[in-house]
Length: 307
Image 1 (cartoon, helix red, strand yellow):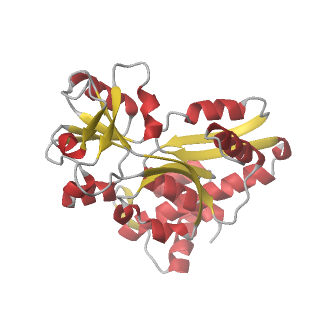
Image 2 (cartoon, rainbow, N blue to C red; image 1 turned 135 degrees about the horizontal axis):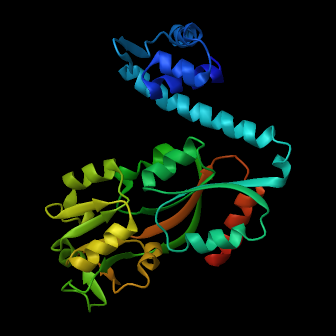
Image 3 (spheres, helix red, strand yellow; image 1 turned 60 degrees about the vertical axis):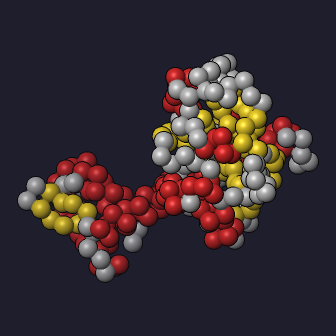
């Protein structure tokens, strides 16, 4: 297997046709077919099913495609970093993060006077943050973990692959709009929150399924809930309905400049309220480049931590 074979395979999967892929790659169709056949022979798998109008991926081909894309992307980054003569003057910052209100200010501070840079900033759900760090798609991850979600977090299975660094701790908050009956309150109980229509932000599929099974433990009203992956969508619903959104302390500022308020959520029984922890992660044992180090130093300064 070589990188070009993987590139040829990916292009064929994208085109759905050996003929179109060969034309796009500027190689002959027999050469492309031979390359695909060599991959199939090496791994003893069938990547495509040949159809009258082209080719389609087999189930194992779909899985192989996901791995191939990761390998090709990593190889491309390697080439771009170490074969470019100007690489020594350029730095990179690849970050995946949950929605955090401080992120942009830290980025601005980091990027000032940074010279030539290549960056990729991705805001996504927590599970994707972890996966992208582990698989090498980003250098750093920023996320929130809770004392109440150890089953869905799968933290122990990932911990050995990651270096986890503490930033801050806080309780749970709820964002509400003017139409909420709790709008003027300073705090509400979980029981009160569970009676409200609810919005969920940045929630991975495993957590969604667990909440349907254990909704009482997680305090979600699973009879009246809508899932979003953007702050703007959440803000619109909070302003137009009496719904409620559980948020971490570090996402509250995302609603600044709107009538949306945040209130503390407190326990209404003998169990303590969940505690959330903000952390940043990187792959275990890998050093940070200069720009990533500058970002982390600025992050530590923001939270009043020693570097």
